[in-house]
Every structure is written in structure tokens, then in C-alpha cells.
Length: 234
Image (cartoon, rainbow, N blue to C red):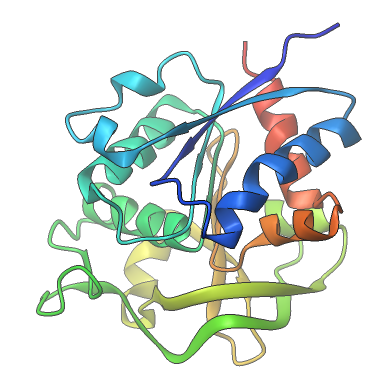
């Protein structure tokens, strides 16, 4: 029997948040579809405010929804650790937003990049309010052919659920793409809904919440792809 795949879920755990209730079950379902088991541990962002030391020993990282986080810096330390160390990373909703923010600051030469929910007066609003709130909504997502995200789905279009009010400010899209981010999912209005890094074992984020599939006891192919990548880490 293979050892369980160890996954750190970074976020400020709250049972009242649907995504938080769903994530452990979503990982279990995905792992079972691969004939594996998982060990899931929640890591509060405040534990990471001084650095990612508490993440060592995990094979992968999921940055969970429900931001603002208790420690924005803790969340960003987690993203940077996964990105620089080649650790499989998955971020959903707020996790996706903070993955973009970390990359903007440390790779895309936008050191003042910020999130308008945290800093409404920022001069570099890389993450800003959506034109239409996506709280408890479902919509079709178009997946860019050939991307990791599209390959995980195996189709070019899928319905997904959201609970968010903020997303990528398209004014910064060119800077992020030139630095290496690939935007791999869009909604029907061509707004960004997913992104990834190709030169990384697995670094992917979605504004939507695929973990919600676990509420129906159904495994999600993207989460299975994340677990498969984590299982390859020695």
C-alpha cells in the first residue's frame, strides 16, 4: 500500500464556509479515483506570517477560499514556496487571487501589486472587484485547448460554481502573460477564470470552486490531476 499523499490546505478554516467543508472530501474522492489515500492538514495563514517553515514535509499545497486571510503575508509565503520549490499548487477563489498577486509582485515586476479588498487605495490593483459579483452563481467556463486545465477536464467547456467578488484586473493581463502566466479559462464574457504556469510540475488556480463537486459526492477531474501531481513527489 502506497503512503498517503500529504496535502497542506492553507486557509483560515471555518466550517460555515461551504468550500472549507468540501475540500477534504473532494481530495478524498479524487484520491480514491486514483487508487490512493490522502493526508489532509489545515494550516492557518497566521502560522506562515514569518515564512513557510510549517509547510515543509508536505508534498503539495492547496490555498483555500475565504479571504481576506488572517495573514495575507502568510498566504503569499505559501504561494511563493510552492512556486519556487516546484511543489504542486492549487488555488481556488481567494487562493487563485493570491497566487496572481504573489506572481505579480515577485515575477512580473509589479512590486506594489495589491488586492482592492485589502487595500482599496492601491496604485496597482492587480486584483479588483468584478464587474458582476459571482456569489453563489454557476456559469459556463471555456477552457483553452492544450492547457493543463483543459487536459484535466478532457473537454473544452464545463459548468462551475462560484462564491467571489474579486478577480484579475485585465489592465495587468499583458504584464502577467509576458512574465509567464498562462490564462487557461474564461467565462462567456471572456473574463479570466483560470491560470497556470507551464514551467512548473503543477501550478494552477481557478476563480471558480471545483471542490463544490464534493457536496454531491462526485470527484472532480482537476482535483484528481492535482492529487496525481502530488503523488509523484518523493
